Image (tube, rainbow over all chains, first blue to last red; front, side):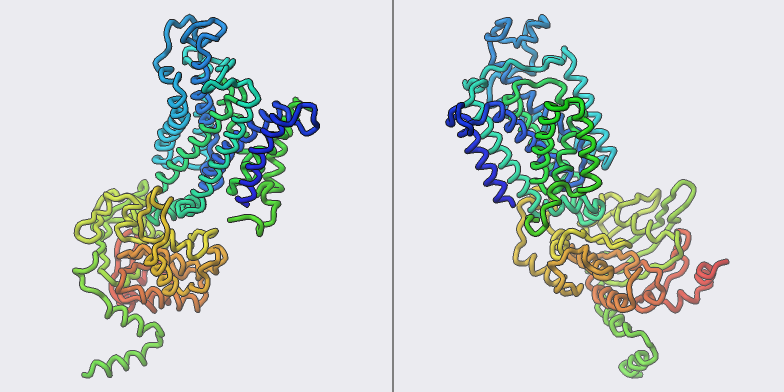
Length: 351
Length: 278
């Protein structure tokens, strides 16, 4: 199953850019840039779903706040992209991004320092979600907050951050967020070549995330993690520090979500506080449930399927999307408790 | 009198098939200096007004098989909770050996100090195979970073196979633990405790819900462990206790009301009163 998955990703990574860049637009086989962007977005969501499945499907930690880590990764790269605009902004200020000039700020806030360098922003993509997950997880797991209480706390975290980022004086562009990005590392973000390259990068990131998660869940640590999910106190009595397992897994998952967010923003071209909306975190959980939790590839399939359905519904019948999403979740929970992946006979699935 | 002749006589008089094993276990008892004594001194645990343990004092010698009996609410489970660190007492002290103060340790630390506990309900990891269950119970570095890269060494693999043999599950090692019978799950769980090479095993109602054959097999297993480990068995099944016990402690309202061999304990007036009702 894993081999098939990697092959599929390789095909996407090679053929989609080829069909977009090399095949002429007049040909029936040509893929539009819109489709490339859409695919890139789905694959970022797939990384995010993998991150959620790792903690929810394998360790029973239901995080309803993973959009926060996704958003923070996106904001980190967004800050770099804003600095890259330089004097090309509407107001033409050499250093300050447009929204700061608009707010009559005279100098760059301290937390924007360093983001003009790509490596620094890339480091922050990992460090900021990782650090937040570490502090939050350390407090929650050490106090043995589990189950629905943990979920509510993560949901509150996501709501609190959304409100904070909506404020103009936070220094993150208020409700408009960041947009109008120009280029990254000298490559024009509007060009088809850059976009195809970002898609390939996302494919590689998804394959790497999947492989890393697969290595974790098949190791002895993975068996401990599943034991924590099914019999937490028993695992503790065997001498395993359950809190530390949960904490490192949570941090790793948050970092994955951050990376997904960082790949998402340059492809979508905007990041604003609505990314932190509680409903977004809940949607991720629905993708995983639809695909089938505790399988990793189920999460990926779920993310792509549900988001394809979302693209279709919001285009064709925009007012019905939320109803469709709700019924999908209820339907899957009742009729397909093991998700879409549960339909595949067990002999063809790897453990 | 020739001791051999006398022994033979007792064997004939006793219908207990485990008598032989019981004596063998008693003979294997190591020197007190080698193992660690578990010592509870005036331990009190209250839940609101109710005193689950009331100045409880008892000790477990190295290598002995001690049975603890008592009616519901006598404090048997609370006592185990205190020893394993799940419940902190209001008063008293709990020592394991001469230098380990159990009240200062966390649950995983107590497990690593050499105290293993078997719960009433079998809680093996159902989706893992029998072998993997034992692998997780292995006495090894249990940190996240170690288990992430750990591979079984030859010696560890051997130890797992040894334990599989002791608990009699060699033929089931690749099966999911969830597919085992109730008795087999209990043995697997005892095997998991053995993987940690504990000095002391706390076993909560091992034969509840077992068939007579499984009960006998469990008795044999526990007796074969005594001597190499100290074993504390909490049990309701009097016949089972009679068949394995050397020393019995009766708890009632959080205190020891009688102590000695089964015969002495059974005839103790307070025990009779507690069990037969007022």
